[in-house]
Amino acid sequence: MSFTKVANLDEIKNNEKKTIFIDDKEILIINYDNNYYAINRRCTHLKGDLSKGKVENGIITCPNHGSKFDLTNGKSISGPKIAFLKFNTKDLTTYEVKIEDEEIYIKI
Image 1 (cartoon, rainbow, N blue to C red):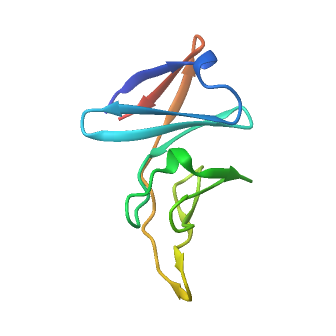
Image 2: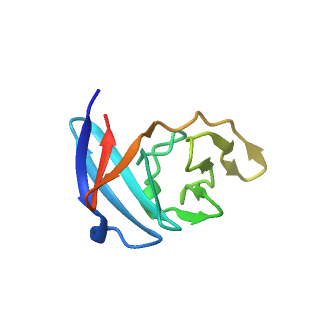
């Protein structure tokens, strides 16, 4: 595994997101409180687009059914809620982030 440059720091402002595609992976780079995180872009429930999700307190929420994931480690905090039903959700894949010379790198 090696690090791959994915963006310059000035491309992803504080509290913004950027989607990148590497091979068959859709990766979401998130600048939350000036810390950078890299996670799988698709929710593990029904592949909702997390780039449209809301980020609060280090947690990203899927816009489709409300699954919540910790940005720091991809752990599922809570599964989707549909009507009165609750489901379990798998953890997200995360990628190690490195900042070097004003550039963002992730380990693939």
